[in-house]
Image (cartoon, rainbow, N blue to C red):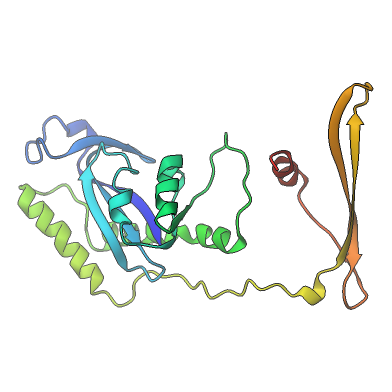
Length: 238
């Protein structure tokens, strides 16, 4: 599953005090595109672009608040952006059988991630495509509403029209992640335990060395390439 939130603006942010149609309903909020006045659409879709769950809230509601309601009966994996990072939320979902996968912020340590999860996380932009289609092709968002009832009927009819659409945005995740073990070489790895540093003071640490390549099952030398900085950061947190 893929989860994200988008803003539904009902007027320009500068005219929010003069808007009387949605007085008491819409609120000022902030998204990655800046401040806005209106509502938020919280959406969960699958890999075929189909709606799984959705909820509309006021613009000042945190993106993480409706997550537990949206994912009540879901299990498996759900991919989201960095705005959903919260340890308690992750634990609650994980205990229910739903693992939330998201990126990390700059001030967070690197963490190892399954290759399958990493590839699907990069395909999270499918939900951005759905938002773009709803807003630009089906006119989900505009500022010409003259009553809240008409506005919500329009939004609801847009959702229904999208559900009947045959060619929805989708992803092809039928990639083969199986390893060809016949081509995996035999690396040379050795470690050494040191109990002191250069100044001869006690400093227990480990040195690990890896050969620049290895011999595979076909008897050919295969070089080893890796990026030093990411490996260095992960090694420090093991």
